[in-house]
Image 1 (cartoon, rainbow, N blue to C red):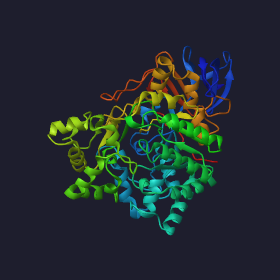
Image 2: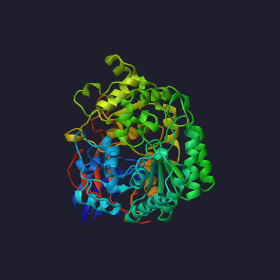
Image 3: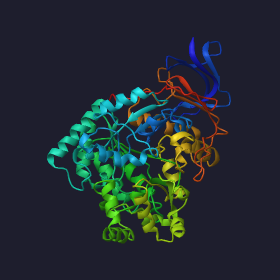
Image 4: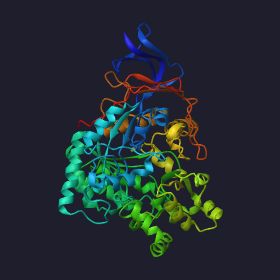
Length: 538
């Protein structure tokens, strides 16, 4: 007697092999049998005729760290078929916390909080944070990375300098505690404070600690535009010297003058692998990125945190210095405006009712509305919104997107946090990847354009990220594996979210099972907290 039988589906098992017709029997949260089960009994039988049955999708790059506390149903992600989220990316995790630096950390992560909401972070150590996650009851599995930025803030605040020996030892100790608690690796965000203040040797030393525990190094590299090649080389150097697997986050070539550089970056990665460096990358399938408005400013103006940044923006001399630096393209810092252009940068979300009408408008449009230049608008908005402004930037080339997607080293990540078209998470006009990443690949890039085969796309969404994380009991449909399963219509699956109307669930994701429990049934979320907080056991 099975708990669930999935009958007559086209099984794509996650390995990249061609589909085949079989039934799947599930018992006690795991796959018990794959075969002909017509004469077997089950408490629940799902008719999957005409549908694809595959492993649950693993989001290699999620920022749902905060949103999961406000809506543990993880609506916008699980309805895409995502059954496991990897959080703590881009150098920011919610632990460890130094109580003396807690306010500084909270202000740095405030842009990820729902508008007008606060989170009581009642933990200090990484293990306490994971235990707190286990208490809330989530609909999908969560794996965690420890953020270099969070560790650096705990040890030395937001200062633009090298760590003292004692501070370096403190950072190593904090990373070790996180790895012992079950973190899957270390992440960096090297265009954001305080990551941008760190040097390569600092990252190598911390990664050596992670490597001892079998973890990975996931990096938002130091540049995705003019310094892209050098930034990829830095990540590879860290992997080589620390002897650690490298995951290059949301890999892209940003800005028209850099389009086409993915030919070289992918070649560098393949050559590094031939030389013994275990490197892969992840990607979202859109030509626009999303970040905070403050990221457009030079790093020095952000030193010390948001309050210090706002003080400098109110100072005419320092504001003028920033204006002049932003007029020039530079390899010294990630000057996104220089390669992107004000007309391609759109306000995604603000806090105040006063500025709500600006959501969905470019900075160039807002400048015309206000009768001011774009840089002044940028500064004024940051001051008015106390630093909390999200933006969307159209910076990528479609050929680069397809080239990276075809690479055997690429896997999929949303680079977003779980949202919902209701309640406090229905904020602004977020990037459509919040709702559509995985269905977009399956519908547009597989079915319509043929960039990938269906089997290869599923491999990049399932077994490849599972292998990268060391999750050897997920990511494939095999007897004995946890029953994280997606059932979708290959002829109808597609994203619906747009830049102007993003809060729309996709079509074609019919069922989602997490640890053997049906969380999404006939496209409807059942509200079952079936997920687990995964702890690395490498």
